[in-house]
Length: 134
Image (cartoon, rainbow, N blue to C red; front, top):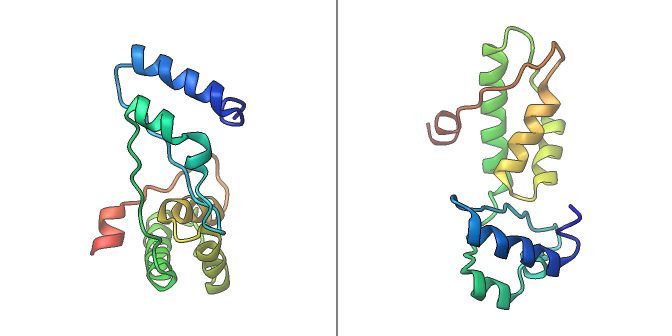
């Protein structure tokens, strides 16, 4: 977090990684509700050009589609969990959808944590291919 709050230091760290790293470096940056892109602040145009940084952006998922996916996902996981996962009510799912700003990854992470009823380190095994595309 400290590196990212001071962009020149971030640029230095990334330059060093580019010289020594053996795998791709991926940053996931979610835009704010106001639509401000934090990537412009973190990776100014000169740094992007110098380090050959690519920006891949996705359109936000519509709230109705997000609700359908989260509802289906919660139902599937609840039936497989043996009581360790509860199905959130409609109001909770709507809150998750609005809080994710159209970011399906963020919404699923929030659903995962909000649905656990306890019982140790149980995690949800969410099959996105099944949930999103079936």
